[in-house]
Amino acid sequence: MPTVPAIPDILKLKRGSGSPRRLQENLTIVLFLLPALVLFLIFVIYPISQSIYYSLFNWKGFGPAVDFIGLDNFKNILTDKAFLMALKNGLFIIGFSLVFQLPLSMLLAVMVARELPGRALFRTIFFMPYVLSEVITAIIWLFLFNPDPERGLINAILALFPGAEAQPWLSNPDTVMLAIFAALTWKYFGFHMLLYLTGLQNIPSEIEEAGRMDGANSFQNFFYITLPLLSSTIRTSVYISVLGSLQQFILIWIMTKGGPVNASETLATYMYRFGFVRFQLGYGSAVAIYMFLICLTFSLIYLRLTRRPDHLSGL
Amino acid sequence: MTITNSKTNWSVRKTLPRFFQYLLLSVVVILVLTPVVMLVFAGLKTRGEFITQPYSVPIPPRWDNLINILREPTFWQMLRNSLLVMLATTGGVVIVCSLAAFVFARMEFRAKGLAFNLFTLGLMFPINIAILPVYFVLRQMDLIDNLWGVIFVQTAFQLSGNILILRGFFASIPAELQDAAYIDGCTAFGFFWRILLPLARPALASVAALTMIVSWNDLLVPLVVLNSDKLYTLPLGTMQFQGQYGADLARVSAFVALSAIPTIIFYILAERQIVSGLTAGAVKG
Image 1 (tube, rainbow over the protein chains, first blue to last red):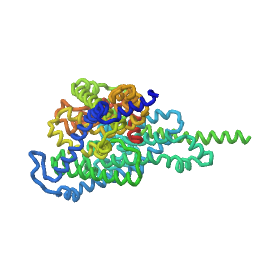
Image 2 (image 1 turned 120 degrees about the vertical axis):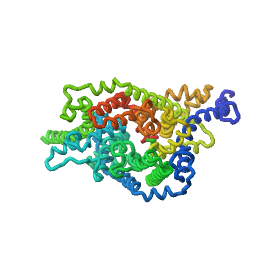
Image 3 (image 1 turned 120 degrees about the horizontal axis):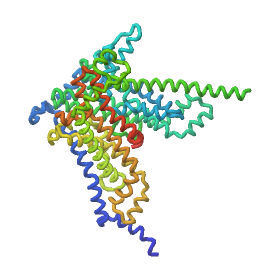
Image 4 (image 1 turned 30 degrees about the vertical axis):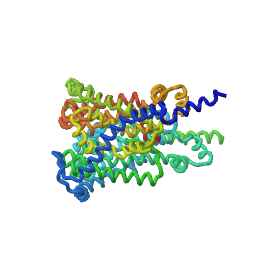
């Protein structure tokens, strides 16, 4: 039977080390990984190590860093009121997103997921703001929030109601975060809706039908059947929402530059201010490391608490 | 009697919620579209018209602002820069990620786990956090005020997520196919090039569409890297334009509306790819 072992022989040849085949494979591995590895090491890993180094210096970015100050940057950040404000605002965006934005997205996803005539159109419209750039979003909302009712639509609508007055939404420390949250929700709810929609489509309709047969009404069906089956999608969406909230930058920078008086500061605007406006690069590096640690700690705890959520993309 | 009764009951029970469903969805549609519609309206008015009637429908539309912007070379220059960066970044991401994803999905070697974990670390370190350290490195490499600086950084920060997406897709292609190809004398590269890539076309399209959107919309990297207006990309130019002519809302609106048009056209053409790329990244990976 000389023909039968022929195939295992060839397979062995492929796996045997030292064979030309193996050599070729190793070469393929190296060549294929090289571009990704080089880019990644130079532009992602190396900068991390650099920022750890510079965070220990008082360095304005000109000439070599020589003024070694140990952990002073890290200590000074923690006592800066603006940094604490940035943390607070991060928590504000996270809290409001979890309480308002994600449930709204879920409600819309459930509505659009059913066999509703015209649902594709709704989906396309709801997702559109996500595709527009943050610059465009920010400028649009800057206009809408214009304090002058003759120029800003939101105040113009408010002025129609008796007793309501035009508000300087973005220059009042009490309303600025709410205004920014409105813009953020406008831009991002469609993304979360889309995640939920995909999750909903993966639930076999038989399961919900079985629930209905057993006499569950729509609410029971949703809370006891659909929602638990969506748990992995919800975990992912919460994770992306929290990390995104902590890193908000462009929208806020264009709308308020973190003002008035740090009232809408976030970690990213705070870092940008010190790094690129005041050129305190050592201090800014320390802020970057804090941001990294905050996000890393959150990720590790969250992933541990929710077991392994299905993966997360670098959005 | 009872039968007809329950029938009408049923249809009321079905239509009434549906009515509220459409009502609520329509409210959301209005909330989503109004800001964009107001922007377009404002862009189609003269400065004077905007001051006297800021919210009216622009009848007849005034194209002056649009024409003035399109007549200047700056807008076209920004468009060109954005296109260049987007195409180079997307090409880079698709090629580099599919090569690496192939190795992670289909080949065995020592330290594979370590190498893969290194890349997933990138997910913890998004560009919004990394921008300052990245700026140091670009300065050392003399890539400041250079479109290549933008391209390299955008590509590098798109690697982790997209390698993950593509690896998942490549791994789902049956191993028998690979064995058969090897038995027929195919090299690893031959299998990758002639069998895997053609099969993975939908996944590659998703990765490409998603990268195009991210690159096209990116402001942070160009903002930090580019100094001379000649190199400005569209988002950076839009921000600059707003800073310069901020008082003339009609004119800025026209510019913003113009800069949104390419994205919206692309979105309508590639909605399916964008959506499947996003959900693959977020749900499966």
